[in-house]
Amino acid sequence: KVLAKKPKSAALHITRFKGLGEMNPDTLWETTLNPKTRSLLRVKVEDVKLAEDNFEGLLGKDTSERYKLIQENAHRLEVDL
Image 1 (cartoon, helix red, strand yellow):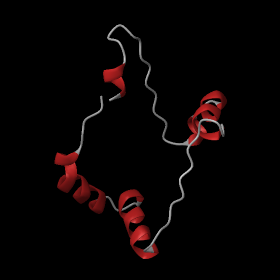
Image 2 (image 1 turned 180 degrees about the vertical axis):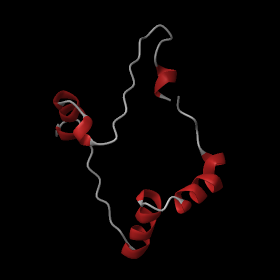
Image 3 (image 1 turned 30 degrees about the vertical axis):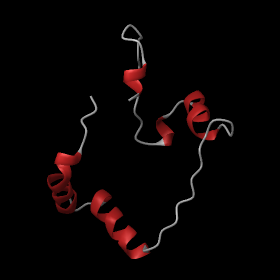
């Protein structure tokens, strides 16, 4: 969606970070810390046990749940290259 708004001649530089610690200070301020530009959203967990199980399945050492999730939902993904 963002790319569609840019002129074809515009040079783009897309960067991805795995965590906030990988950002340089200017980028961290611009995207996360600046009160004028940041967005804060309250997250409320209704089912803590379900949330813990989901995090363990997605981020835990046992890859079988992650693999299963990817296999079952790959058709829903939009490839972003």
